[in-house]
Length: 402
Ligand code: ADP
Ligand code: ASP
Ligand code: MG
Image (cartoon, rainbow, N blue to C red; front, side, top):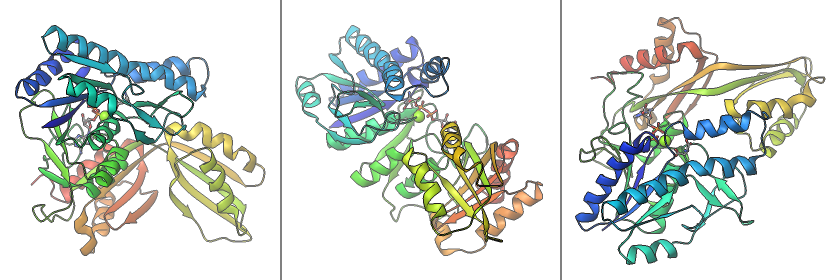
């Protein structure tokens, strides 16, 4: 049996925690399993490095940022290898490059293009535990790239796929996926099994427990994931897998909150064919992830556009839109917003789910600024300060605590 185990920032957040991880890995190894371990940087480390870079400029060169932040994961991979070897377990730590991970060139959100697993396989054949620094690879120029925040999850899934592992375990600081972030709603319930599609929606709508791209890849490669706690490593976690008959057909399976969004409104822009293509094309050229676009009905040859972007991409968005300052009536930016979303495959066949959400927020006197829906989700943009309140109210309204 080959098992891929990924340990997140809190799980490797100090030397004692790394020791704890070494003990978990040792148990598996002693049970006769082959183990590949993916590690994150120590909790807070990536943010600290990003702050260092931001000390000099608001827009540091991304190539250097990647070289900088990839160091966090190297530290923990080497330390874990040292810890294991000191316990008599043969191990080897590899950087993303050494593990054969080749990515696109988009620094800070590169995509994995290929994994050459030979080096990992050779070390496994020698009986070693292979430890890989998560979150990183190299591009075709040989420069270090990183895979976007939370990217160690992606490293784990991609390696599990490339090595055809029997199991992929994501160890974190909660013991599974809950109906909503248990830190916001203490009555949240743990979910035994969740489909890729629902997890993908929850993750891309703000549930940072799994990086959304890692779930997308898991679905594509058909990699089953178990999310579990590194503090209770032998307790059953949550299985993320293909939709199947054992899954409860609940109306709503979870609620997600994303506070890292910003709203952009362009008022009174020229209403002519191609204007949206032009503006969003320019944003796309800068790799900005635009979401929830609303355009009002034009009047007097003027239209208004409102959309959201990740807060981290707001500076770049402002730069791109600078040229529209004179040709529009006004451009407004608001980063004090939150997006709260309800997710559930059961929504496909039920009506009235959205109405109930709107009513719930109305009862709490929370104004809805934007709405978007798909087959299995409803998202609402509200003022940031009401984010947690909205999550709790919706959680109760859909009886997720029952
Ligand atoms: P790691 O450092 O292990 O990658 P993260 O901090 O990225 O861990 O993700 C774990 C956190 O995700 C939890 O501590 C929890 O607060 C948060 N979270 C958000 N939504 C959920 C959810 N639906 N279920 C479980 N945890 C969630
Ligand atoms: N250390 C990186 C981050 O904080 C990657 C990860 O933890 O998965 O985003
Ligand atoms: Mg994470």
